[in-house]
Image (tube, rainbow, N blue to C red; front, side, top):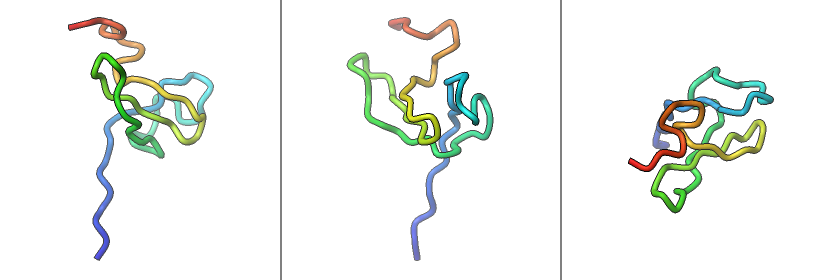
Length: 63
């Protein structure tokens, strides 16, 4: 029996993407980490990389 896929509670942060801020986990995969240690995500629809905190006051903050 195949293992079920994990769900990612992240939405695409690219305003030009068809799934911008819609459908959590819709073809979004983890794609390593930035040098700061933050998780990096990749949207298969618009082919862009982003962080979970993009568009929030925590974006680019070192905590």
